[in-house]
Structures are given as C-alpha cells and as structure tokens.
Amino acid sequence: MQGEAFSWFKWMHTNRQLSSWESFVRALELRFGPSTYDNHQAALFKLRQRGSVSKYQANFERVCNRIVGLPPEAVLNCFLSGLHPHIQWEMAILQPSSLSPAFGLARLLEAKFLDSKKPLSALLLPRPFPIMPPPPPKPPFPHCLTPAKMQADRAQGLCFNCDENFGSGHRCKAKQFLLVLAVEGDSHDLSIDIVIMISKYPSRTR
Image (tube, rainbow, N blue to C red; front, side, top):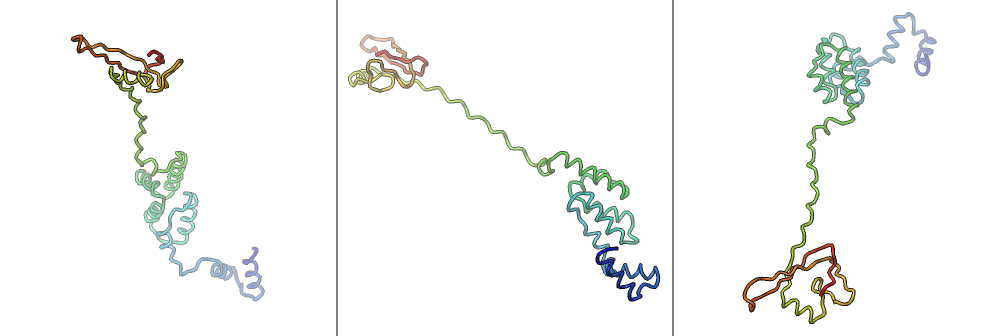
C-alpha cells in the first residue's frame, strides 16, 4: 500500500478497527470501492464509445463487472449499441453471437476504417463534376475593304490592314494578308472587295 490507502490502513490498525480479514476487506470496500447507491446497470446502458474500441471495451468491462444477473444477450446489445455508428452498421451485418467475438470484430472493423484513412461520410459525399476547359478561341471573322474605304485610307496615309499611319518599313501589329475578290459583271458595275484575314505573314504592300 502507498499514499492515501496506506494512511487509511495505518489509522485503522492503530485504532484496532481491523479485527479480522473479513472486516478488513469490508472496510476497504466501503472506503475505496464504488458507492452501493450507484446504478451500474443504468451506467452500462448509457456507456458510449468516445475513443478507440480498446478503451471503450475496458470501460465496458469495468462497469459490467459491477452488475450481477444481467442476461448475456442484454450485455451484448449494450456493447453493440455503444459503438460508433459506422462500426454498428458492420456489426449488424456480421451479427456476433456473444460478447467475446464482438470485441474482436469491433477491433478489426476499427482497424479497417483507420487503414482506409477516409471517414465514411467522405465516401458517401457526391463527387463534383470535373471542370471543363474553356472552348478554344474562334478564328477572326474576315471583313471586307471596299473601294471607297481604300480611297479614304490612301488619302489619309493609313495602312489598309491596321488603320495605322503607313510609311517605309511599316509592319502591321496584327499579322494579316489581303485577298482581292473581283466580282464578275458589267464593267460599269465592277467592284473590288479586299478581305483582310489573320496570317502568319505580315503585309507590307500598299
């Protein structure tokens, strides 16, 4: 003995309170044992797993040892109902017939869930739809350069392609090429359309 228990024993022995072994055991239970007014059966029914299965099993056995006369089936149901919900679901499928295999199965299921490293709630969540890449940019739409526009640009000294000032060594910022389309018809009604499109070759021609 040590600590508080040794101090109690020394006081009881000095004051001749320990006349026999039976009286010593009875006095020891009254001093350090659980209260006789505790409802251990109610405590067993309310017991829940808060940590690991091993810790829950130790607490369950500690409370269960203080109860006499509870049917084995009721003890088994108390243990199963106190487990974590995701372990309870698996145990309901396995249906252990007694307490000893229930202890072993609960530890195995706990190890399986810990090994997966994913909580069951994460497995049940719907997967988000993958984000689609943006569509590729559409090619530039060609536009027509009318004879009137050509004449106006020439008069102002502008480039036909980019509407910037035209001079020696001029290069368009946007690389383009010119496509001249002649429309067949009466010579008096002849019109010329110049279609400007993006190209990898810069145009330097007036």
